[in-house]
Length: 129
Image 1: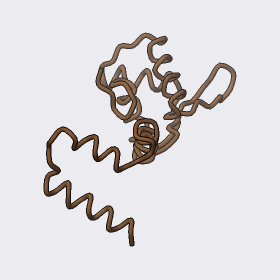
Image 2 (image 1 turned 90 degrees about the horizontal axis):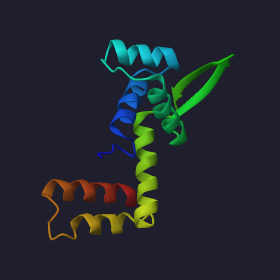
Image 3 (image 1 turned 90 degrees about the vertical axis):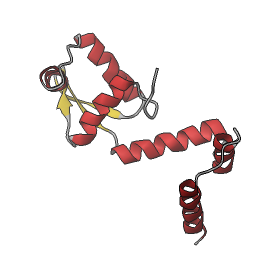
Image 4 (image 1 turned 30 degrees about the vertical axis):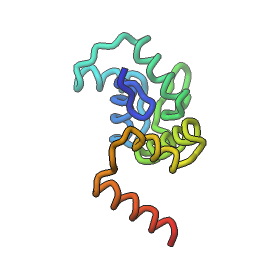
Protein backbone atom coordinates (compact mmCIF):
# COMPACT_ATOMS: atom_id res chain seq x y z
CA UNK A 1 0.00 0.00 0.00
CA UNK A 2 1.27 3.45 -0.88
CA UNK A 3 1.80 5.76 2.07
CA UNK A 4 2.09 9.50 2.15
CA UNK A 5 4.28 10.61 5.05
CA UNK A 6 3.09 7.65 7.10
CA UNK A 7 -0.56 8.17 6.12
CA UNK A 8 -2.73 5.81 4.08
CA UNK A 9 -4.25 7.30 0.90
CA UNK A 10 -7.59 7.88 2.67
CA UNK A 11 -5.90 9.42 5.73
CA UNK A 12 -3.89 11.68 3.43
CA UNK A 13 -7.08 12.76 1.63
CA UNK A 14 -8.70 13.56 4.97
CA UNK A 15 -5.65 15.53 6.06
CA UNK A 16 -5.59 17.51 2.81
CA UNK A 17 -9.14 18.57 3.69
CA UNK A 18 -8.04 19.72 7.15
CA UNK A 19 -4.85 21.38 5.88
CA UNK A 20 -6.84 23.36 3.30
CA UNK A 21 -9.49 24.39 5.84
CA UNK A 22 -7.88 25.74 8.98
CA UNK A 23 -10.79 25.20 11.36
CA UNK A 24 -12.45 22.43 13.32
CA UNK A 25 -15.20 20.20 11.92
CA UNK A 26 -17.79 17.93 13.47
CA UNK A 27 -18.00 14.31 12.40
CA UNK A 28 -21.21 15.05 10.48
CA UNK A 29 -19.61 17.97 8.62
CA UNK A 30 -16.72 15.76 7.55
CA UNK A 31 -19.06 12.96 6.49
CA UNK A 32 -21.27 15.39 4.52
CA UNK A 33 -18.33 17.07 2.75
CA UNK A 34 -16.80 13.81 1.56
CA UNK A 35 -20.16 12.41 0.53
CA UNK A 36 -21.34 15.52 -1.36
CA UNK A 37 -18.08 16.95 -2.73
CA UNK A 38 -15.85 13.89 -3.11
CA UNK A 39 -18.45 11.19 -3.75
CA UNK A 40 -17.19 9.04 -0.86
CA UNK A 41 -19.88 6.83 0.57
CA UNK A 42 -18.31 5.74 3.84
CA UNK A 43 -19.96 3.94 6.68
CA UNK A 44 -19.79 5.96 9.89
CA UNK A 45 -17.53 3.33 11.46
CA UNK A 46 -15.08 3.58 8.53
CA UNK A 47 -14.71 7.34 8.88
CA UNK A 48 -14.49 7.06 12.66
CA UNK A 49 -11.66 4.52 12.31
CA UNK A 50 -9.69 6.80 9.99
CA UNK A 51 -10.17 9.81 12.27
CA UNK A 52 -9.06 7.74 15.26
CA UNK A 53 -5.92 6.65 13.37
CA UNK A 54 -5.15 10.29 12.54
CA UNK A 55 -5.50 11.26 16.19
CA UNK A 56 -3.18 8.40 17.16
CA UNK A 57 -0.67 9.62 14.54
CA UNK A 58 -0.98 13.11 16.07
CA UNK A 59 -2.14 14.59 12.78
CA UNK A 60 -5.56 15.49 14.23
CA UNK A 61 -6.89 16.55 17.59
CA UNK A 62 -10.33 15.57 18.82
CA UNK A 63 -12.11 18.17 20.96
CA UNK A 64 -15.26 17.48 22.94
CA UNK A 65 -17.83 20.20 22.26
CA UNK A 66 -20.81 19.02 24.24
CA UNK A 67 -22.77 15.91 25.00
CA UNK A 68 -21.90 13.37 22.34
CA UNK A 69 -20.31 16.00 20.12
CA UNK A 70 -16.71 15.97 19.03
CA UNK A 71 -14.88 18.31 16.71
CA UNK A 72 -11.72 17.48 14.83
CA UNK A 73 -8.96 19.87 13.85
CA UNK A 74 -5.50 19.57 12.41
CA UNK A 75 -2.63 19.42 14.88
CA UNK A 76 -0.22 21.21 12.56
CA UNK A 77 0.15 22.64 9.09
CA UNK A 78 1.04 20.31 6.23
CA UNK A 79 4.60 21.60 6.21
CA UNK A 80 4.98 21.10 9.97
CA UNK A 81 3.54 17.58 9.74
CA UNK A 82 5.91 16.60 6.90
CA UNK A 83 8.87 18.09 8.77
CA UNK A 84 8.02 16.11 11.92
CA UNK A 85 7.42 12.89 9.98
CA UNK A 86 10.71 13.31 8.12
CA UNK A 87 12.62 13.95 11.36
CA UNK A 88 11.02 10.88 12.98
CA UNK A 89 11.76 8.75 9.89
CA UNK A 90 15.40 9.87 9.83
CA UNK A 91 15.78 9.22 13.58
CA UNK A 92 14.18 5.76 13.45
CA UNK A 93 15.72 4.57 10.20
CA UNK A 94 19.14 6.22 10.06
CA UNK A 95 19.83 7.10 13.71
CA UNK A 96 19.23 10.72 12.77
CA UNK A 97 22.14 10.74 10.30
CA UNK A 98 21.54 12.70 7.11
CA UNK A 99 24.83 11.30 5.79
CA UNK A 100 23.61 7.71 6.29
CA UNK A 101 20.40 8.61 4.48
CA UNK A 102 22.25 10.12 1.50
CA UNK A 103 24.56 7.09 1.34
CA UNK A 104 21.53 4.77 1.38
CA UNK A 105 19.81 6.52 -1.52
CA UNK A 106 22.99 6.72 -3.60
CA UNK A 107 24.54 3.32 -2.76
CA UNK A 108 22.87 1.58 -5.68
CA UNK A 109 25.54 2.94 -8.00
CA UNK A 110 23.44 5.82 -9.18
CA UNK A 111 24.99 9.25 -9.06
CA UNK A 112 23.34 12.38 -7.76
CA UNK A 113 22.04 14.58 -10.53
CA UNK A 114 23.72 17.95 -10.90
CA UNK A 115 20.54 19.60 -9.59
CA UNK A 116 20.46 17.33 -6.51
CA UNK A 117 24.15 17.98 -5.90
CA UNK A 118 23.67 21.75 -6.13
CA UNK A 119 20.65 21.65 -3.79
CA UNK A 120 22.57 19.57 -1.23
CA UNK A 121 25.60 21.81 -1.51
CA UNK A 122 23.46 24.93 -1.02
CA UNK A 123 21.84 23.35 2.07
CA UNK A 124 25.22 22.40 3.51
CA UNK A 125 26.63 25.86 2.80
CA UNK A 126 23.56 27.41 4.47
CA UNK A 127 23.98 25.18 7.54
CA UNK A 128 27.66 25.98 7.94
CA UNK A 129 27.16 29.76 7.76
